[in-house]
Length: 482
Image 1: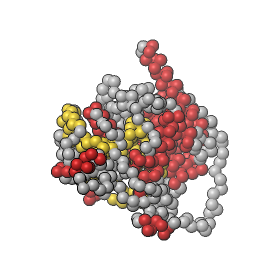
Image 2: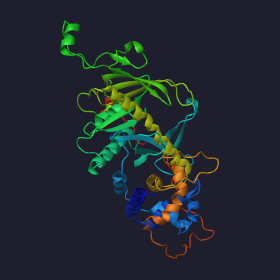
Image 3: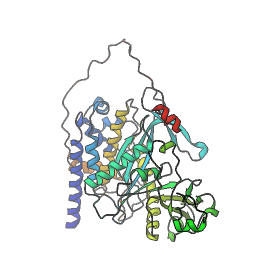
Image 4: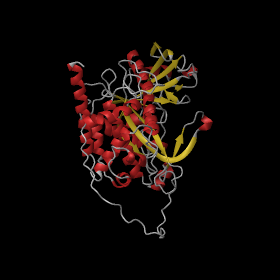
C-alpha cells in the first residue's frame, strides 16, 4: 500500500472514530447500552429479525433487558445528533448540495395500545393493490450524491403525529436542515442555492412560498391533471387586447397539463442520450404558477393570495429500465429564467431522488428498522435514530471495508463503492481499530418481577387511529372556530 493510500485510510479511521465518540456524547441515560446496541446492529451477520437477537452477539456485552431498557428509558439528544450529521462531509452535484425529503411508514396495524398512529398509504405493485394501514409515518431528509448508488446521507427524521400538518412539518424540517447547513459552513454566501427534490405527494408550491426567505430551490413532481396559469400580460399587451379598458388580470391563460392545445411554445428544449432511459427530451415553460384559492392549505392566509411563479418541465424518455413504457413526467421548479443547463440539471437531480428508496429498503430489510414491536412512539423514535447512526457509520466505513462477497454474488468492479450490505459484513473486522467509548458492564441480577399468580390490575389504554385535528374547509367554518 502506498503512503498516500495509507494516510487516506488513517484519515477515514479518524473521521469514523470521531463520529463514534461524538455519537456517544449525544447519549445520556443508558448511554452504554444504547451504544453497544448500535455496534451489535452493525456487526450482525444477516438481516435483523428482532432486536433481542442482537443481545446474543459478542459486541453486546450486556443482557437483553438492558436492550429494551435503552429503547424505553434511554435519553438521546436529537438536536446534537442532527448537528453532528450535518457536520460530516457532504456529497455535492457539481459543487451544489442536493437534498430530498420523503415519508416512509413504520406499520403497526396490530398495536391497538400504541398511541399517535396514523393511517399510512402503502403502495402496491398496482393502484388496486394499494392499502391504508395504521402506523407511524416518518419524514426523512437526506443528501444525494451525483452517482447512481444506493448510498444517501440521512440528515434528519421526524415522526408525524395526529395533530401535525404534514406540509408545515416538512417546511419546518427543511428550514431547520438548511439553517444547520449554513451554521456548519456547508453553505456559504455566493454558493448556489440548495436544491430540494420531492415527489408528487408534496405541495411544492406552498413549500416554495413558506421557504422563500432561504437559499433553496424546490423541485417537485406534479400530477398530470394539474392546471397552471401563464404570466399575467403586461399593461401594454392588455391595452392592445382590451381597448375598452378594465382591471388588468392577475393571471394569464390556462396551461392544462392534460391538454396539449393549451401549451404555448416552450422557452427551453433540450435533448440528451442516456444509457438507462434512451433519448431524454425536456421542454420547459417559464413563469408558470397556480391560481390559488383561499381554502384548504391557504385558508389561514391573511391578505391577497400570492402568485408563486416557477419553471414547468416536461420530461419524456424512450423507455424505463427493462424496456418498460415511460409516461411523461411533469416537474415544477421554484426558480425562474432557467437555461438549458439548468433544466437538464433539475431533471437529472430528480432522478437521483429514487436513491432514497434504496435507503428505506436497507433500513427495513437489513437493519430491521420496523422490526421492534415497541408500544411507546418515543421508543420508536430512539430506535429510528439508532438505525440512522448505524447507517452513517456504514457510509463512513465504506472506504475501509474489503469485499466479502458470497460465491453467488456479483463481483464489485474496481473503483466502485461497496453496497451497504457488503460494508456491514466487514464492519466487525474494523471495529477493534475504532474508538469504543462505552464502559464495561457492571455485574447485576434481575429484579423480582411480578409475583407468581398475580394478575395485571391496570389494563393498557387503547387508542384510536387517525388525525385528531381537522383543518377547516371553508372561511365560515374557520370563523366559527375562532
